[in-house]
Length: 356
Ligand code: NAD
Ligand code: ZN
Image 1 (cartoon, protein in one colour):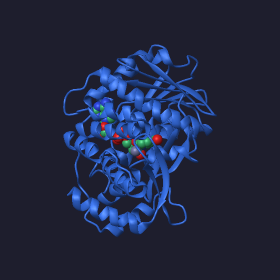
Image 2 (cartoon, rainbow, N blue to C red; image 1 turned 120 degrees about the horizontal axis):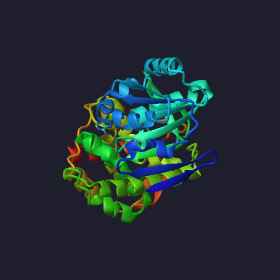
Image 3 (cartoon, helix red, strand yellow; image 1 turned 30 degrees about the horizontal axis):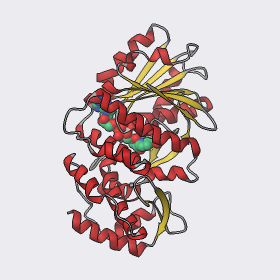
Image 4 (cartoon, helix red, strand yellow; image 1 turned 90 degrees about the horizontal axis):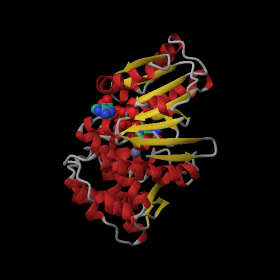
């Protein structure tokens, strides 16, 4: 199955299905001068051969492997990749393939966006979370001062998502990705949330189920990106749950909790803030129940509420010292509001006490 993404600058397709990793050649232009695959040390062992062998029959293909983990999204690894790309003979008519999770997509995409002022690249996501990161055109590496501070907008030529590769991802990565699917559902419609609410990742999931959830999640993201690629307004809705989520991630230290696990707690908190600001009832207990059923961790950093609020203020979305948060006026009805620090702190205080 496929879905198309149309922005002002580019149109591309997202293909989702079984065994697509063996058929990359069917989805790409045939006149690339050479192909450079970038993957990580975990994905290499599982899927590199599957992608490489069939492609080699038709193209001049080279590859490189970076260590798995967020620390590879660095300026040093970036520079090494550019060096290897040059040495492999990659030129302006070449193609980069990002084979891996969001880390690889961001890193390889950033290489593609800057190599000889930008060349084509293809996203081959291998994690559930990467349904989010592979669509939308944001690519980046990290700076010691913060995540994704060095980046670009560079849409892929296509996204090729083989759902079979998802059966090998660690449980906490599956959870992380499903938190983002839950996010997409909560900002979209009550019916999508009803569907995701039933998901139990602790049981084996079928390719069909995975495919449906990914397609719907990507459709939500694509629709938003099509209207606002550069995040001047509604793309911010995708940050639902991320204000507290990012603060938890950085206070806990990356690696303590996955991104999605932190975002899930952030969504619960955003429910509380929304209920306070708009005086409405949101399905807090439902989301909490879903998180418990799926064994989300409820860890919070051992720092004061005011420290967490300060961290939230460092968010890229902060406007003249006021925290801008994505809130819901109802499931499927996101909005952006600037909320008073005092209120945020009071709500967070109570929220933490109840949660732990
Ligand atoms: P990741 O790419 O680090 O993958 C998580 C782990 O799973 C890694 O150890 C990886 O080696 C392993 N793995 C990947 N695929 C596997 C498979 N099929 N089987 C077994 N193991 C596998 O992390 P992620 O959660 O996919 O992505 C996180 C990154 O995405 C972050 O860097 C984040 O900043 C970025 N991101 C970007 C955007 C965007 O719009 N560009 C959006 C969200 C997140
Ligand atoms: Zn996210």
